[in-house]
Length: 129
Image (cartoon, rainbow, N blue to C red; front, side, top):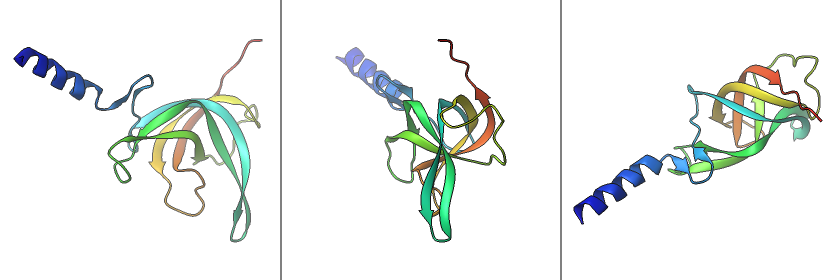
């Protein structure tokens, strides 16, 4: 009986930071993460007009550990991109990209998705047809 309890506790601790079927949860800043998806430029209403912001529509749902909201990992399908003064010429609407950066929860009215990524690098992914 004791071995069964120890194996159950070991499995619980080993899987405590994971979402079954998706792997480990992503951590927020200062941990760097890599996400892949398609870049879209979306318009959101703002007090002084319209915000046109880049949003990464993820290829696969990301689960992000957000201790300020929940002790569970929260799902994210879209992530707003910040920290990019100018996108590379080959990154246009609906470009498939891999982006490195740090994630954090949105805190201001100019952040339009639950999670925001401060971008370090953007690399286009070439798709062969």
